[in-house]
Image 1 (spheres, rainbow, N blue to C red):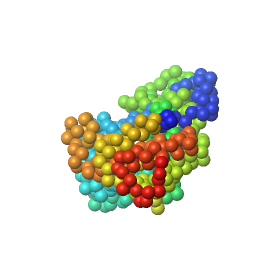
Image 2: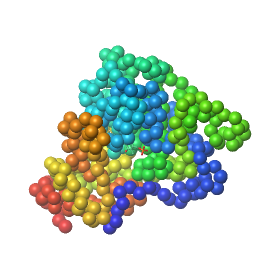
Image 3: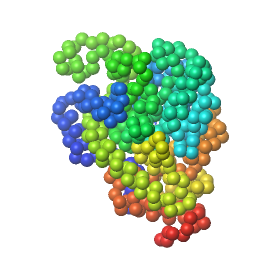
Image 4: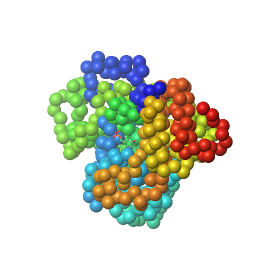
Length: 415
Ligand SMILES: *Cc1c(COP(=O)(O)O)cnc(C)c1O
C-alpha cells in the first residue's frame, strides 16, 4: 500500500476558491488575503493577523520590527526546523540554542540558564502541534530580576521593556492553551502555511499580533502590511481600485506579501478546519495512541495535558530504548511497505551549517535522545481507516522485527 507522508488537502471547495480567484482577474494580494486574515483572527481571537509568503519571512519581518541586530541573542530550541534559527541569523544576531523537554518543547529551565543582558527574544516551537509551556516562559521573562537585565535598544524594545516571546506556531494552528488558542500565549505567533502544514496556501505564513496594551495593534498592523510590501504606502490592489497611480516608499521594507491565488487555498481550508480537518487529524492521533499503548515499547506523545491540547500536526512515534540505527532500520521497513514516514527533527547542531558554527549536539542530550527514537507517522484528513490500520500493523511488525518480542507488555499481537 502506497501511503504518502503529508499530501495537501485539496477538495472541490479549494479548487472552486482558486478558480474564483483566477476568474476575478486579481491574483496577487487583495480580497482573498484580507478574508484569510479575518478567518485567522476569528479562529484564534488574535488582535491582528498579517499574511505573508512564508513562516520564514514572517519571522524575519518580526525580528526586524523589534530591532534585532548584530550583538543580540535570541533563544531557540536545538530541536526545530532550521528556519527558526536562520531567521535570527538573517538579522545578524546569534541564535542561542537550548535543550528540550521530553514532550519536545523548549525547556524553560534551560531558557533561564541561557538568558543574558543581550537576550532580546525567545522563540518557542510548538513541535508536532503541542504548545510550549508558555505560562512558565512568561513568568520567567516578566520576573523583575530577569526584566531588569533587559537593555532596550529600539523604540519597540523600549515599549515592551522585556524579552519578546515569539511562538514558532508553524505546526500549531488550532492548538489550545487553557480554553483559548495557544497563539494568544505569545506576543507574536507565526503560523506556516507551507504545503505540508495543517492549513496550506502552497507557501505562506501568518503573523498573529497579541502584543501588550502598550502597543497600538491597528497601527502596528498597518505598518507591517506596508513593510511587507517594500514599504510602499499603497498596494497594487488599492492603486488599481481608485486610489490613483502615485505612491510613496516609506520604509526599507521586504517583499514578502501573500498572493490571493495562494490565500484562496487556505481560505477554503480554514472554514472547515476546526469542525472537519482538525477533528479528523485528532481521531487518527487517538487511534494510533490507543493502538500502540498495548505495547510497552511505545512512548506516548503528549497530545493533551491539563493546560495544552495539540493541533495534531504530527504523530511523533517514539520507541523505548532504541538507538538511532535501530530507528533508521524501522524506518526502512516502513518505507519498504510503501509507508512514507519522516523524522522531526534532526537537531540543528547535527546539521553542517550549525555544526561548523560551533554548536555541538553533546550540549543537547535530550534533543539527541528524542531525535534518535522518533518517527513521524502519516496523519492527515484524507488518510483512510484502511490506511491507518495498515500503518499500525506495519509499525508493530517493524518494531517487533527490530527490537524483538521481549519489548512487549504481553504477547497480544500475532501476525
Ligand atoms: C515548516 C516550519 C517552518 C518554516 O515554515 P516556512 O513557511 O516553510 O517558512 C518553521 N518552523 C517549523 C517548526 C516548521 O516546521
